[in-house]
Image 1: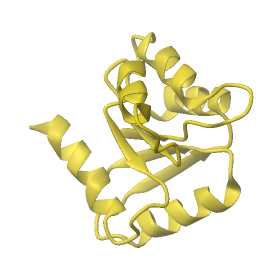
Image 2: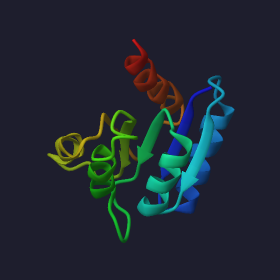
Image 3: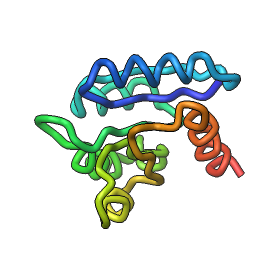
Length: 126
């Protein structure tokens, strides 16, 4: 059962993603953190298959958190996918340069997001 950690400061966004993933055919386990520091701690405890990382958060933004995670031996190989409303030219490249493995734009495609997440996980397994 794939374990997903969603790091996002907006409660409504966390609830939406949780509902979508829990209702999908993939039987995801979904953990949530409302800020980057808590998310990093939770990632160390749970060792998720994939982290969905909001880019714009107070205190520590998602790109800084991603760079921090990439510097940790225990989490270095964990998949990180940016989930962000930042859709300006160059934003995708910034997330990849920070160490994200992928980029999903908000608003999400409700019908595709579970498949997209599973595709990232399967690509790592092959």
